[in-house]
Image (tube, rainbow, N blue to C red; front, top):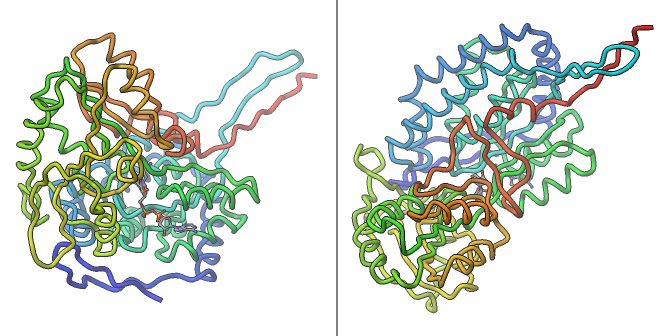
Length: 451
Ligand code: NAD
């Protein structure tokens, strides 16, 4: 079995990637078990050094990784370069963790009580196709830092940068078997991570449907699981906001990465009293978004990842969906899709389900209470933005919106030094931030008797 990688900007075949079967997966997990036992005994300072060397190898390979990502996923080249740099930064950040996995000494009678952060063993990471290398690094860097081995299954459509990262780990001197990239089908390699008892934790990023299935599979073995799932995040614009800034930035909060972003603010909530004024400015901003050849430095948005995904996005735009205006996109081969602004009913399919493409639903609201209610009327709760000049309102609404990653007067979502994850059906657990390495450990409590 294999998969032909297609360049989504040209429709041309790039390469063929062989798929592993269940037997290959078990063999890789067995190698990981052996490698982990040795790795856990490496001195913390040496594990830290090894991760810094891995970061250096990624740094030296930035351009190659970026070209691969653009070819495979269609990301604009400037974004792909940022993503490769982000992987390096995540590795550098967690290279500080091996020497800082500090336990506690807790006062008790009759002896000494100490806690240790023990590695879990083998960690299985399953990634989606929208940000293949960055999302992988959020799992593998802290997992390795905490003394675990990692098996990584990239999404079928976008395996190339993950495969290259596996090669770079070896080139940087990480032991064989410690970090293995296993391309294959979710229902084969991914499922085997869930059912093989030697894998002690699953880090899954992907759709909520598959996440639920993985969670129930993990329950069989009480396997640890982190889930980063879908979103339908709100960008809330109050009448007192800097409307120029809010309108100028709104396109990028949802059309970046062609809307294939779990944090995309795909619902744009605008206070009714400034609705018309805002929409006028927003239209100009949307028409300014540069959708085109991802190899050009000034391209802001590339194609959708595949033709199949383009059809899925298109299926949301049924005849009854009112389209306010669109941006532009190239014609011809490639899975191109113009940024699209729709004004549907609050409870319509396009306003409630994750489209995962460059489509935003604009919904007017009446007041602060209505804005919070509308933002929270979703099974998801991943991200969101709040635009207001009123500090008190910024605080109230940020506390009121059910979402793991909010931002006031900006659209920032992900920084490797701050925790990331979702409320409700957007996920379970947190990645990144100062505590992520601990999430790849078990706390062991040991009492030493003084008798
Ligand atoms: P997906 O759920 O179809 O696939 C994700 C991964 O799971 C792939 O590697 C796939 O092969 C694997 N998989 C599929 N079936 C499996 C099974 N039965 N067992 C084990 N693994 C299986 O998701 P996708 O379409 O690749 O990605 C898009 C989704 O990911 C969107 O819903 C998006 O919101 C979500 N996402 C979430 C975050 C976040 O951090 N919350 C980040 C990026 C993407």
